[in-house]
Image 1 (tube, rainbow, N blue to C red):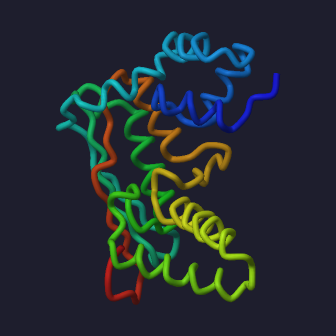
Image 2: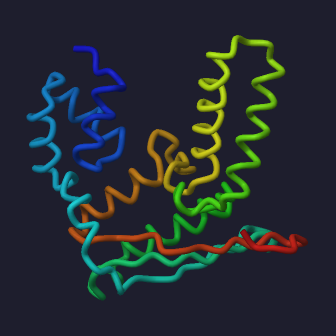
Length: 201
């Protein structure tokens, strides 16, 4: 059976699970939505969304300094228990995040964290570009929408493709960690310094 993007999106909205896991679950269950939800629940992934309300006050801050000392990153990731925070797996997860941020330079963790002035500036640029393309009016909005989608996937940490495995996003990586620990995990904040730049992003 052909697993459509619409089907994958629907499953993702119902479970809060990453795209790749949703696609895999639907493929395993021949496109059956209910079976796919059960499949994900059995794997412990679908409960990630339900854990979102639980307090995450433990965790770690890790740093990454790029070879040559030109780029440095600090990232804070929270979880629910000190036990999880002290595991090697959690430490590796936070360190990999810091390394990823050094490589990709995101603006914010998610869309909500993007400054309004940056958003309006980007939209304005894309509107101008679209208008100059000479395409029909009804197509222009779709062009701007597509460009904004691409901007979000570049600018928002959770929507970026993971540098160590471009088949998954950082959101997918986070969901995997939530499933493994059984805890609510939040990427709280990060700061990235680049030598010679006035402001850290």
